[in-house]
Image 1: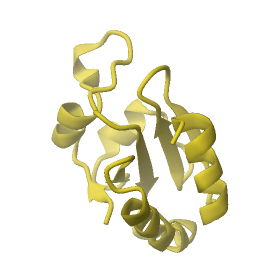
Image 2: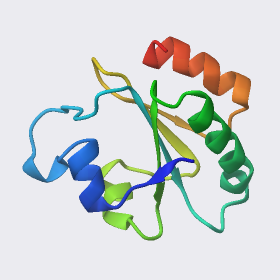
Image 3: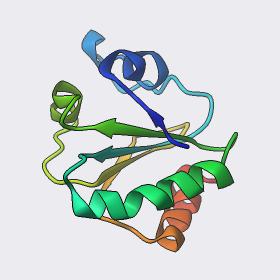
Image 4: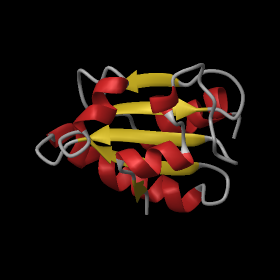
Length: 117
């Protein structure tokens, strides 16, 4: 199951954006963050796929979810304008944002291409 992040847990596990400065990922494995909202139908359709992938890639990729309604400051800091938005975070280099729902196969390809997993 994907782990839900708050602003505080995000700063501890992913990146402390409040300090400013360049992106510095704090995790030990590549990550995927699903920015979603409860009322969003495409988000609801994507959610079981995200949960399946979190089981399949356990220990290889950290998979997180952020509720954009509850964590508006966090969503705003990433410029989230449409949901679902998926943030792919490789161990090295800059994160990459992908918007809209994706199939399990598409996500696995993105894991391989972006996260090198």
